[in-house]
Image: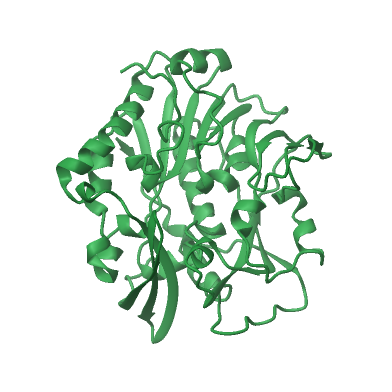
Length: 400
């Protein structure tokens, strides 16, 4: 297993986020007059000691799949509330032997991909959740799943590069992850991209990671956790980065908001299926006055398109990628694709499986794939917890 030490330079997000998360107990605060501000990313801050924190944790709701918690972390003399969810996994996952049986098929598939006749590079970035890390030992030890994550990474082949989002402490966790949504925010996404790009650049010296311009919007929203748990005590403020990507052609496979509308095309060459799909290049339609900034809907998922294929016609890298990802990958798809000539996508939520039954090596050869990039949350990549239409690594036939 090849590992990459995370970039400490992105600790700068901690101070920035503190001014962005809206925590409300009744009516949320009104946003300022302007709808968009831009600021270049700042220089790195020095390393520091982890903050000392105390926690109160309460389970507030339960579904068929998850337990939902509200936590108040107290550090630096202030209270910092946030939410998290924990999958209701089979009891035997708490037993090392039982957990290994769940993870071994995923491990074998990854190792087989790296060892296949396709002769591709395999890059895995795991969007770890809070129960995977040592923070959970202080917050709620009964929900800690870190030993499973360690087993998974230790049994990956040396030919599989693996990285993961590993917050330094609770202050950094709250800076990289939404308060009311289980996804990483723009700063967590920024870090994930730079860690992946840095690893790629070691293999490909011509690859230069891109810097972004931060956009702080006036869109406050209730994230997936708040809506699922029917808890509206806190809100998040939506932020994204503009990476000034070169012109490219993107075909969008589908969007989350399916309406059955005819295919629509935009001037950038994208093809949309379904209802309007907000995306980084036309984000103004979200914030031009027609969008209700207090609407309680999933702004993270609906902001980014779900890609099928991305082509950067001016690129001459000789590289082509197969990108396998879930919702954590949405904001990274076109960005990572900018380092390749062509990128093909498999969106691992089980609703569409264009690769079902195809031989992995043959498919990579047919499309000229040089690199397989996988970005998924840990519950999907470790256990295939959601058990959709095929394994979380999609249902290729991979010779073992």
